[in-house]
Length: 312
Image 1: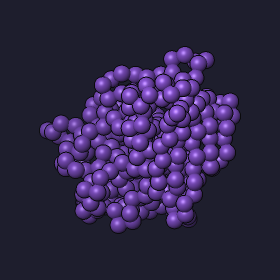
Image 2: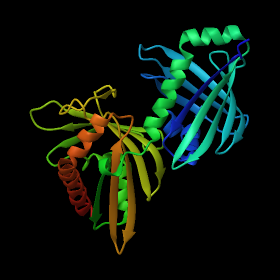
Image 3: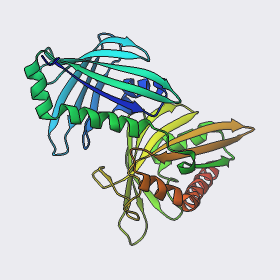
């Protein structure tokens, strides 16, 4: 008789603690949880035994699926067990556990087990596509967390004659951010700025005589006056992620980390970025354009410096 469970396993190219963080931090899990084409809106994520994660999963056809997860066991960074339900807040549809095995060499084996009430329930979930959905979910995790090869990561640094607090304000306050972000010669219109982990900035870069070019940030970890993580994408006016207007194979998502350091009245900002959830063609296209990116960011940071000098 077939065991009433579904087990999905994948080797993920990241250290175990990093993978654990992907499962337990809202600013990360929102980007990869669910099958291809699905997105998530998280209203609550309380990662502790007895705590609840509530979210709505948005299907590619526009259908919304209400979900909740209640954590039963947490053994960081190796294992978690939880109950999973939908519209009924008291009735669990199934129980599940995730185990993370350290394979060494910055790889982790992720095993997802759905523990079901009966063989009939298992058959229904398989028919619904639970196996393919789980495989796609773990593939999205791998694509999100896997490090982009060093040769395909962009890096640039710039020193500013301004104190850290002033530079941080320029990155974190919408009226200041609008004065300098973007290539030289463009004006920036900030439609929305929610500067917090899991928040978004949505903006338009505007040049005379041409349609605006929309973009967005989705923030990851933010450490005040130390670092900002954000995923940068092109978008449309509604905030949906779109392809870049200049290359069909430009990455849809670029994960960036900006760090800040202050010494003798100068603040140095260092930006590193690389594609995530990307194809090899997209990563190659990204790496081929480092020179133009250096020019673009150089112009952007020059605008920041000019803005800060005006504020003295």
